[in-house]
Image (cartoon, rainbow, N blue to C red; front, top):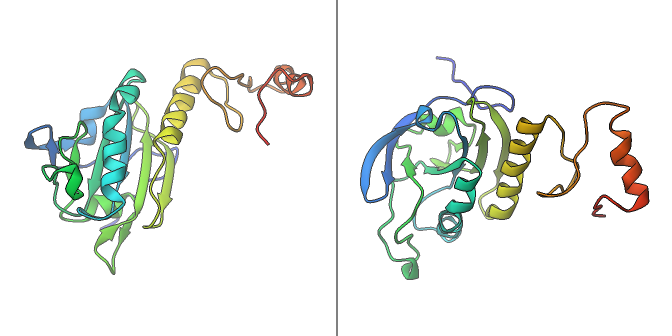
Length: 201
């Protein structure tokens, strides 16, 4: 059987799996998030040192993602857990679904499964309202992801999708963008020398 692997600019691999959503267990699917942006991120396993910090960080800032028309789903090849207190390394009450990929098939489709260990790498995927993968980041196990950078990327993709312009390096909401046309882009590059556009070195 050929396994569809997640690729930028390609449709995100479809999935359905059990998840903790609020106070209940239920199946969730990729199609549930059609029409909105989705941050779909993977963590290796429950009750480890870095994983709860990531899930809590995304959960605590979910309103910022929702204002952008974006949902967030966490996933692992472990069980979906959330009731252990934060003070004991658990999650407490979280505001994002936690998907349990017990078959490992979804992790394989998203290219994050470590066969020898039976766990996933720290993969993060931004999927647009049409179901297309727009961004992929995969970290090795020791280092967690940045919520700030993920928000910046969602804002940037949303802006370019809505306005047809492109975002330069280090772009943040409110910064100048570039018109994807040779002559029109001259306005942006001219502003670099005049000091109008922000430049990070």
